Amino acid sequence: MAIKTSLGAASLVEVLDRVLDKGIVVDAYVLVSLVGIELLGVEARVVVASVETWLTYAEAVGLTVGQT
Image 1 (tube, rainbow, N blue to C red):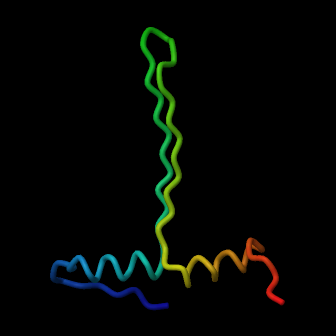
Image 2 (cartoon, rainbow, N blue to C red):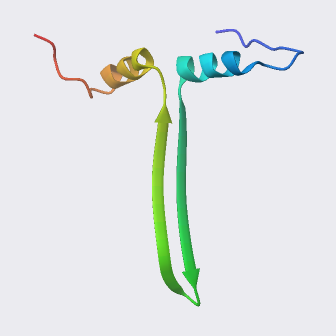
């Protein structure tokens, strides 16, 4: 697979197309504490991909249910 490079700025449509084609994962963990006491803990995982991309990866790792 060749890497495409561009000298100009990417438009929002191009960026969105690439994200939906390849997918993106944002994994975050936030811990708020005061004087060693945990006040708030947030753990989040955000996955953005097209349905086609998700189905391809889900099938590869066995997450899909067999079709009859």
